[in-house]
Amino acid sequence: MVAKHTACTLYPQVLPPELAIRLFETMLNEAEKWDRNRFWLFERAVESPHKSSFYVRDMSIVAGYGGEDDISDLEWKEAAHYWTQFGAADPNPFPKLMEEACMLLEDVVNVEMRKRKQFDLEWGGNRRWIANVAASNCYEGAKENVGFHSDGLTYLGPYPTIASLSLGVSRIFRLREVISKSEEALRKPRSFNIPLAHNSLLIMHPPTQEVFKHAIIPQTVIDTFRYRASPNSPFTTSASLNDDPDSQLRSSTCRINITFRFFRPDYRPSTIPRCKCGEATILRPDMRGKRDKGGRLDRYWWACQAGKKVENEGKDCGMWKEMDARAEGRGPFMGDLAMKEGVTRPADNT
Ligand SMILES: O=C(O)CCC(=O)C(=O)O
Ligand SMILES: [Fe+2]
Picture (cartoon, rainbow, N blue to C red):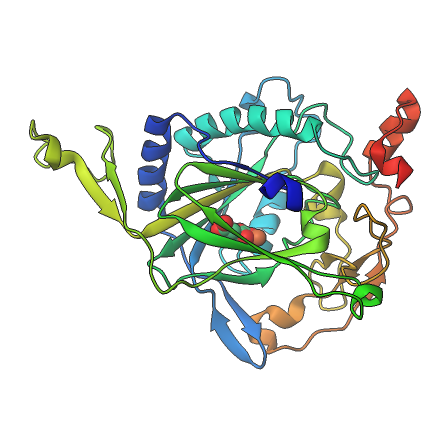
């Protein structure tokens, strides 16, 4: 259903169950140190209605990844700074279990990607999709949420693939189409509610970020997540885990989400245009502009995002510049590979 009507694929059970529980408990423990992002919205400072954090993978241990595009620590700090809406700059390393999960998920993502249409502006530098960063969110109870947005493309580049793992309580992920201005008079945007249960993987293929917004909506009720603690749980002491099987039962009303992403070397922080405020700009797709039937957009913009910074109280320099990927020296793109190898891709026919 999901794969048919949206640009996403849903795997209801993706990791070995024991790993999913151990990772859930690890991330719950990590989340105790996380913050809520603060930013400026509609004339006031607001706090994000959930906690989140940003992780950078040690690429030197990833088999088959040359590391020649090594992005410096300083650049990762900058990426983390913008992820947290100008907050804490120090990214965290992947915890061991996140690394274990990531390797398994990459295999699943690569199988699914082969079934999907590719876009010319997709990254063409690696044969396999890999993740080099992860953003993690923690939603406590039924009301914590994230509002409608599409993921900033600044470091992901156009047409990214994002793998989103859900752990703990099941919550509703809502996808809402953004239709172009020319279509507005003809039809209404469609919405899809996708319940994301424990240990499910949602792969957001391209052009999800270009033609949909997504949200985790507040709910009136949720089902408590009940599970059996793992012997290595950070919350388990030898006193709390005894021979009585009921002593291992736990319940939680939290949901942990981990989105595994690939930050492209050709969109690394040092290549991002700066605005007059001195901040890195944000890359936005022209979601309401012209596009073809397959969701290929006409243009992307670099836009000032400094107005979101609480201290700036909504003031920004208004910079707005069209992206010219070739003139900016970006790539290699999927489109270049297709030409080199003489491959006709579905994207070429739309
Ligand atoms: O929690 C989720 O499933 C979505 C999180 C999200 O949209 C994001 O981190 O950008
Ligand atoms: Fe998102």
